[in-house]
Length: 183
Image (cartoon, rainbow, N blue to C red):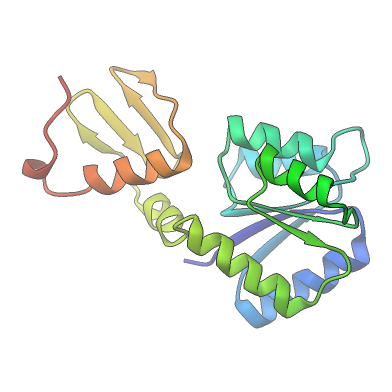
């Protein structure tokens, strides 16, 4: 399935140039948002596979704020794209939750290579594959909804990281005898 990237960037010229390249050269679906507020409906709906986030955004929410929320809620791979090139800024962004950091200006082939590297490290093939299944996986009181990326045990939500979710979904998708029912 086609990889979906949400790029939160207020520099429209940069966003349009990169979007056109990534869609034509790589076949990705790229949704652009000029602010965090504009990105929220995308995150609430069909979650993207990757976030590309500018550090400095209009509206009072920074790329760092988005990285923090992502770590708590969505657990998506993140590439921070910014003009801030200090080592301190890079380290801060990576420690807050960015998976990679790209300083403007950058080349389109470097961007593409970094996207592929981040998605490889994140185990990207699994996200869309797990989400493409229509019916939730049920193992006793455990329900794994790949479409919503949610897990419930006895009807209560289970808080998992993205990696934990992927691992559990892959294990639960095995024939019934390989994964015992939860008790």
